[in-house]
Amino acid sequence: MVDFEFKSNYNFYDLVKIMSLLRSPEGCPWDREQTHKSIRRDFLEECYEAIEAIDTDDRDLLLEELGDVLLQVVFHAEIEAEKNSFTADDVCDGICKKLIIRHPHVFGDVTAEDSEAVLKNWDAIKMQTKSQKSNSEVMHSVSVALPALIRADKVQNKARKIGFDFPDVNAALDKLSEEVSELKEAILKNQSDSIQAELGDVLFSAVNVGRLLKVDSEKALSDTTERFIARFEGMEKLAAEKGLEINSLSLEELDNLWDTVKASSN
Image 1 (tube, rainbow, N blue to C red):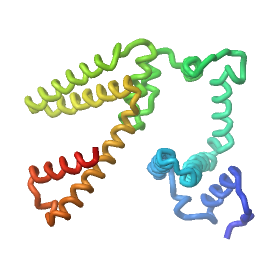
Image 2 (cartoon, rainbow, N blue to C red):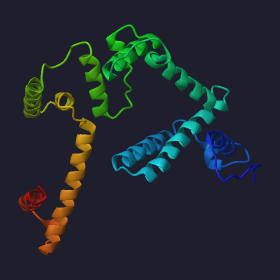
Image 3 (cartoon, one colour):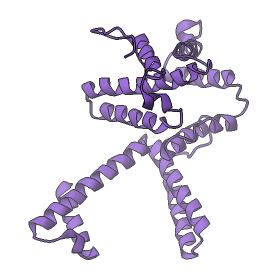
Image 4 (tube, one colour):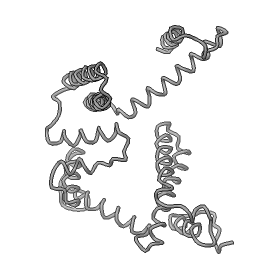
C-alpha cells in the first residue's frame, strides 16, 4: 500500500499526487502501462460526456464529467512529467499566460467595446503569438482531429473574416443545389473517387448554409439522428401493436409505418 493521506476534501494538487502514485511502481499496473495514444479515446469520450451533461442541463453530471476531463489532463501531464518534459504546473502556467496575453482589454490598456472587438483582438494576437503569417496558415491550424462538421465550420469562419463568404443564405443554398447536381452526375458516371469528393462538397456546402443561418451543423445532425432513433422506435412499437414482425416487412410497409410515426410526432 502506498503512503497516502486520506481527507474529507481534496484539491487539484491532490489529484496530481494521486495520479503520480497510480503511475508509480507501487501503484496500478494498468495506469503504469498507459501512453498518450492509449488513452486518447478516453479523453474524447470524457469530453463528449461533459458536453452531454451541458446539453441536458444536468449539473450533478457536469460536476462529475468535468472531474473526468480534468483527470485526463492530469494523466497526460503526468506521463510527460515522468520524462522531465513538463508538469501539470507548466500546463497551468501556459494557459494562464495565454489568457493574460489574449485579454489586453482586461490586463492591459487596450479598449474593446464589445464581444466582436474582443474576438478580433484575440485572432490578431493568436496569429502573432503563433507566428502565423498568412490566412492559409490560420486555416491549417484548425485541428484535423475535430469532428468534420465542426472543422468545416471553423475553416469557413476563418474565410469569412477576410470577406470570402456568400452574400446571403440563398446564395449558399444555390451552391448546395449545384453540389447535389454534381454528386448526381458522378453517381450516374459511377466514378467512385468523384462520388466521395462531390459528397464532401455537398456536406461542406450544407455547413455553409447552417453557418449563415447561425445553426450548429454538428448539433443539427446529432438532433436529427436522435429523431431518427425515436421514430424508428415508434415504428417498432407500431408494428408490434399490429402484430407484425418489423424484420419481415417490405420497404413499402416500413415506409408506411415511418410516415405514420412521423405524422404523429409533428
